Image 1 (cartoon, rainbow, N blue to C red):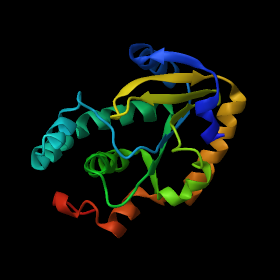
Image 2: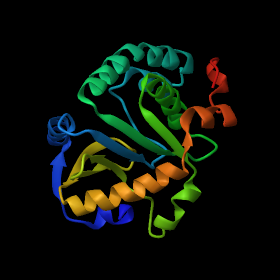
Image 3: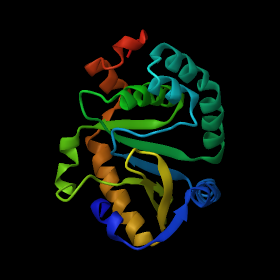
Amino acid sequence: MLERVAELTGQELKLDEYFEDFDARFWQVDSSWKLERRQVFQEPDVPSWAAMAAGDRKRSLALADEMRTGIAEHQRRLDAHGIVQRRIRVVELPLSDYLWWELYVLRIRADLGERIRVLPPSDVASWETSGSLPEIILLGEQNTYQVRYDDDGTVMGAKLLTDPRVAVACRAEMAALWAKGEDLASFLTRTGVLADTGKPS
Protein backbone atom coordinates (compact mmCIF):
# COMPACT_ATOMS: atom_id res chain seq x y z
CA MET A 1 0.00 0.00 0.00
CA LEU A 2 2.82 2.47 0.75
CA GLU A 3 3.85 2.56 -2.89
CA ARG A 4 0.24 3.01 -3.98
CA VAL A 5 -0.54 6.08 -1.89
CA ALA A 6 0.77 8.38 -4.62
CA GLU A 7 -1.72 6.87 -7.08
CA LEU A 8 -4.79 7.18 -4.87
CA THR A 9 -7.21 10.09 -5.03
CA GLY A 10 -7.41 12.29 -1.97
CA GLN A 11 -8.01 15.85 -0.84
CA GLU A 12 -5.27 18.14 -2.12
CA LEU A 13 -4.20 20.68 0.48
CA LYS A 14 -2.10 23.76 -0.14
CA LEU A 15 0.65 24.48 2.38
CA ASP A 16 -1.36 26.60 4.81
CA GLU A 17 -4.34 24.26 4.50
CA TYR A 18 -2.11 21.27 5.21
CA PHE A 19 -0.60 22.81 8.33
CA GLU A 20 -4.02 23.82 9.65
CA ASP A 21 -5.61 20.45 8.89
CA PHE A 22 -2.70 18.50 10.33
CA ASP A 23 -2.67 20.46 13.58
CA ALA A 24 -6.41 20.00 14.04
CA ARG A 25 -6.24 16.24 13.52
CA PHE A 26 -2.94 15.61 15.30
CA TRP A 27 -4.09 16.41 18.82
CA GLN A 28 -7.12 14.12 18.47
CA VAL A 29 -5.16 10.87 17.98
CA ASP A 30 -2.97 8.66 20.15
CA SER A 31 -0.23 7.89 17.64
CA SER A 32 1.58 9.09 14.55
CA TRP A 33 3.85 7.29 12.11
CA LYS A 34 6.18 9.09 9.73
CA LEU A 35 8.11 7.59 6.82
CA GLU A 36 10.95 9.76 5.52
CA ARG A 37 12.50 8.58 2.26
CA ARG A 38 14.05 11.60 0.54
CA GLN A 39 17.68 12.31 1.34
CA VAL A 40 17.48 16.06 0.78
CA PHE A 41 14.91 18.60 1.97
CA GLN A 42 14.93 22.39 2.06
CA GLU A 43 13.96 24.01 5.38
CA PRO A 44 14.73 27.72 4.91
CA ASP A 45 12.53 28.75 7.86
CA VAL A 46 14.78 26.82 10.27
CA PRO A 47 17.86 28.90 11.22
CA SER A 48 19.95 25.82 11.97
CA TRP A 49 19.24 24.40 8.53
CA ALA A 50 19.99 27.75 6.90
CA ALA A 51 23.39 27.87 8.61
CA MET A 52 24.15 24.34 7.44
CA ALA A 53 23.09 25.21 3.87
CA ALA A 54 25.40 28.24 4.01
CA GLY A 55 28.30 25.96 4.95
CA ASP A 56 28.61 27.03 8.60
CA ARG A 57 28.34 23.67 10.34
CA LYS A 58 29.54 24.93 13.72
CA ARG A 59 26.80 27.58 13.88
CA SER A 60 24.28 25.10 12.51
CA LEU A 61 24.92 22.69 15.38
CA ALA A 62 24.84 25.47 17.97
CA LEU A 63 21.47 26.60 16.66
CA ALA A 64 20.25 22.99 16.61
CA ASP A 65 21.19 22.67 20.28
CA GLU A 66 19.11 25.79 20.97
CA MET A 67 16.11 23.94 19.50
CA ARG A 68 16.22 21.44 22.38
CA THR A 69 14.06 23.56 24.70
CA GLY A 70 11.26 23.85 22.15
CA ILE A 71 11.46 20.16 21.27
CA ALA A 72 11.32 19.22 24.95
CA GLU A 73 8.23 21.36 25.47
CA HIS A 74 6.55 19.76 22.46
CA GLN A 75 7.40 16.30 23.78
CA ARG A 76 5.90 17.17 27.17
CA ARG A 77 2.70 18.18 25.40
CA LEU A 78 2.70 14.91 23.44
CA ASP A 79 3.17 12.94 26.64
CA ALA A 80 0.33 14.83 28.32
CA HIS A 81 -1.97 13.91 25.42
CA GLY A 82 -0.76 10.30 25.35
CA ILE A 83 0.50 10.60 21.76
CA VAL A 84 3.31 8.28 20.66
CA GLN A 85 5.36 9.40 17.65
CA ARG A 86 7.26 6.90 15.54
CA ARG A 87 9.56 7.92 12.71
CA ILE A 88 11.11 5.58 10.15
CA ARG A 89 14.08 7.24 8.47
CA VAL A 90 15.61 5.72 5.31
CA VAL A 91 19.31 6.60 5.34
CA GLU A 92 21.64 6.31 2.37
CA LEU A 93 25.39 6.32 2.96
CA PRO A 94 27.44 8.39 2.49
CA LEU A 95 25.17 11.01 4.04
CA SER A 96 23.93 14.04 2.16
CA ASP A 97 24.70 17.32 3.92
CA TYR A 98 21.01 17.61 4.73
CA LEU A 99 20.85 14.19 6.31
CA TRP A 100 23.97 14.85 8.37
CA TRP A 101 22.13 17.86 9.79
CA GLU A 102 18.80 16.09 10.20
CA LEU A 103 20.32 13.14 12.05
CA TYR A 104 21.85 15.57 14.54
CA VAL A 105 18.40 17.09 15.15
CA LEU A 106 16.78 13.66 15.25
CA ARG A 107 19.25 12.59 17.93
CA ILE A 108 17.94 15.46 20.07
CA ARG A 109 14.36 14.40 19.37
CA ALA A 110 15.15 10.80 20.27
CA ASP A 111 16.89 11.86 23.48
CA LEU A 112 13.69 13.64 24.48
CA GLY A 113 11.28 10.84 23.67
CA GLU A 114 10.51 10.52 19.97
CA ARG A 115 10.84 6.93 18.77
CA ILE A 116 13.07 6.78 15.70
CA ARG A 117 14.44 3.88 13.71
CA VAL A 118 16.72 3.83 10.68
CA LEU A 119 16.60 1.66 7.56
CA PRO A 120 18.90 1.29 4.56
CA PRO A 121 17.37 1.76 1.08
CA SER A 122 17.61 -1.98 0.49
CA ASP A 123 14.84 -2.54 3.02
CA VAL A 124 12.34 -0.55 0.94
CA ALA A 125 13.65 -1.55 -2.50
CA SER A 126 10.87 -4.10 -3.11
CA TRP A 127 8.33 -1.23 -3.00
CA GLU A 128 10.35 1.03 -5.30
CA THR A 129 10.20 -0.71 -8.65
CA SER A 130 8.68 2.40 -10.27
CA GLY A 131 10.18 5.14 -8.11
CA SER A 132 10.99 6.13 -4.55
CA LEU A 133 8.37 5.78 -1.85
CA PRO A 134 6.47 8.97 -1.01
CA GLU A 135 6.83 10.82 2.26
CA ILE A 136 3.92 9.58 4.39
CA ILE A 137 2.45 10.51 7.76
CA LEU A 138 -0.27 8.49 9.49
CA LEU A 139 -2.39 10.01 12.23
CA GLY A 140 -4.44 7.58 14.27
CA GLU A 141 -6.57 4.94 12.56
CA GLN A 142 -7.88 6.96 9.65
CA ASN A 143 -5.70 9.82 8.38
CA THR A 144 -2.98 9.32 5.77
CA TYR A 145 -1.01 12.27 4.42
CA GLN A 146 1.25 12.14 1.41
CA VAL A 147 3.40 15.21 1.96
CA ARG A 148 4.14 17.05 -1.28
CA TYR A 149 7.54 18.57 -2.10
CA ASP A 150 8.96 20.37 -5.10
CA ASP A 151 11.99 19.01 -6.95
CA ASP A 152 14.37 20.71 -4.50
CA GLY A 153 12.66 19.25 -1.45
CA THR A 154 10.65 22.27 -0.25
CA VAL A 155 7.30 21.31 1.25
CA MET A 156 4.38 22.46 -0.94
CA GLY A 157 1.37 20.89 0.77
CA ALA A 158 -0.11 17.43 1.07
CA LYS A 159 -2.70 14.98 -0.14
CA LEU A 160 -5.04 13.72 2.59
CA LEU A 161 -6.71 10.31 2.46
CA THR A 162 -9.26 9.49 5.16
CA ASP A 163 -10.15 5.93 4.12
CA PRO A 164 -9.42 3.78 7.22
CA ARG A 165 -8.51 0.86 4.97
CA VAL A 166 -5.62 2.84 3.51
CA ALA A 167 -4.38 3.89 6.94
CA VAL A 168 -4.61 0.35 8.33
CA ALA A 169 -2.72 -1.12 5.38
CA CYS A 170 -0.03 1.57 5.51
CA ARG A 171 0.34 1.13 9.25
CA ALA A 172 0.84 -2.62 8.87
CA GLU A 173 3.61 -2.04 6.33
CA MET A 174 5.21 0.68 8.42
CA ALA A 175 5.12 -1.63 11.44
CA ALA A 176 6.96 -4.24 9.38
CA LEU A 177 9.61 -1.69 8.44
CA TRP A 178 9.80 -0.57 12.05
CA ALA A 179 10.48 -4.15 13.12
CA LYS A 180 13.40 -4.30 10.66
CA GLY A 181 14.76 -0.91 11.61
CA GLU A 182 17.71 -0.07 13.84
CA ASP A 183 17.26 2.26 16.79
CA LEU A 184 18.70 5.68 15.94
CA ALA A 185 21.15 5.70 18.87
CA SER A 186 22.46 2.28 17.89
CA PHE A 187 22.83 3.34 14.25
CA LEU A 188 24.77 6.48 15.18
CA THR A 189 27.08 4.55 17.51
CA ARG A 190 27.70 1.80 14.97
CA THR A 191 28.36 4.07 12.00
CA GLY A 192 29.93 7.07 13.70
CA VAL A 193 28.37 9.32 11.05
CA LEU A 194 28.05 12.20 13.53
CA ALA A 195 31.55 11.86 14.94
CA ASP A 196 32.50 15.24 13.48
CA THR A 197 29.91 17.01 15.62
CA GLY A 198 32.22 16.71 18.59
CA LYS A 199 29.63 14.85 20.68
CA PRO A 200 29.26 11.13 21.32
CA SER A 201 27.18 9.42 18.66
